[in-house]
Length: 301
Image (cartoon, rainbow, N blue to C red; front, side, top):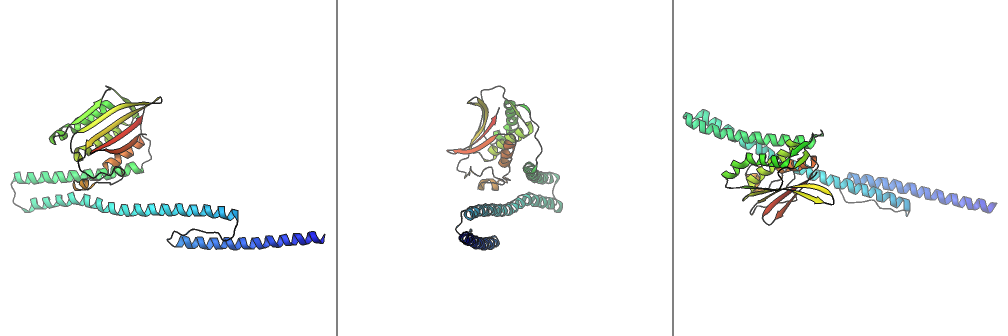
């Protein structure tokens, strides 16, 4: 009996010692975690008490710390990116406004003929139209990225819609000695989509090609049949010459190649295309085929 009591006493003593060491280890881990959260470092928690459960516990905490750090890095990059783009937006908005005010001041202070005043006022009008386009683009993109409203879908003939959008850009393309080649074997192609959003997608892609292509634009609309699933491919292809286009970031908000900024691009046109495409359940991809920029949009039918 005394032997049993002695063994139990030893076991209890060992357990008490282990509990004491465990408590001290947890306190140390807590202090180390506080230090890690206070300072900006890559330090992680390490175990000093060899225990399987503590090891698993520390691994989970370290995984969480790593995820938090990764999110902090992303947020910091976004913050720096946003600060930079706010500067760019301010410049984009201020340029046509300042120019317009300068022309108005010139008209008011000089002895111009009516013909000369009309000429200057037309310049002011173009600057203000540009300003209106910029504000509308920023507002529209803000609405797209923050709105959770449901999108109303209707049966839409994509062939007719593409042709309608093309007709609105025909004169602009011709004035720059550029052509639009629409290739489609279907007379009618029905898709359950939002007509207004789809029209904006096509308009933005046409406008992008008009501004930055070095040649003609080719539009293809075709059916893709694979494993019983029918899909529609809407593809825009145009030569961009020697322009430096980063296809991995071309749909990013405010992305512009060097040539874009000098021409007054907001960098929102293709970002809106991507947002609208995804809202409508489609997939979008940009790629380079030699000197041609190819943007493919795929919808399930």
